[in-house]
Length: 78
Image (tube, rainbow, N blue to C red; front, top):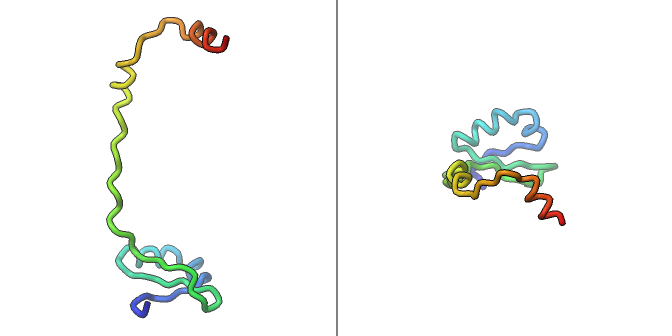
């Protein structure tokens, strides 16, 4: 833990932007409350790849066409 910079909760509150900017540039911080370590801020690894959403229009085009949805709802409720 000696390679980490230290900051108190108050310093984190007052200098959030600067500390987050430093973390984004590769620094690590140990956050202390009353001299006791309570959290660690460090750069995260590469973000996980996001999945693409399915093509909504393609899914809709595959659905059966209905002329009177009110009638279907009425049948479903009875």
